[in-house]
Length: 147
Image (cartoon, rainbow, N blue to C red; front, side):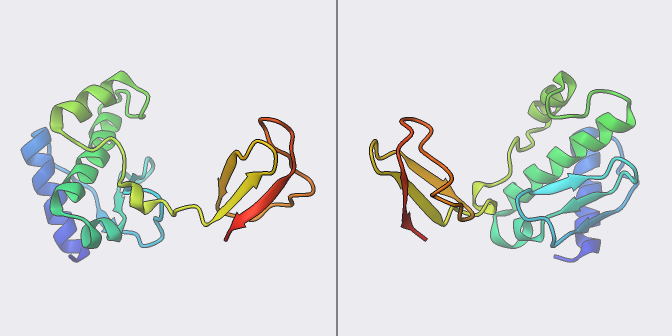
């Protein structure tokens, strides 16, 4: 899918679901890693993670687009456009947008530490100094389980 096809899809979804045209620019942004899309407050443009379009079914992409269009239309109407706002939650439910991006966009933790005493596990993205940190439950020493 190209940026022009994405633009047309967003314009169509905006008319069908919100009955208001989308008058700004939509594009793919390959730098988005842990989110499905982003609404830019200053420019009113929408950016979509290209992995959503290639790795997931069309319903997921449409859900992400509806989510971003909720931000867009509410912000332009000077209503509550943030995730915590009631207006946003009601409109998102009404149009059937996705509340969260697919979980596989977030990288899985690669490093596992375990407490030597209580065996509580800690899942991390990065290494940390096990001499400096202790278990939050019992205060025991930690050991590296897997990388």
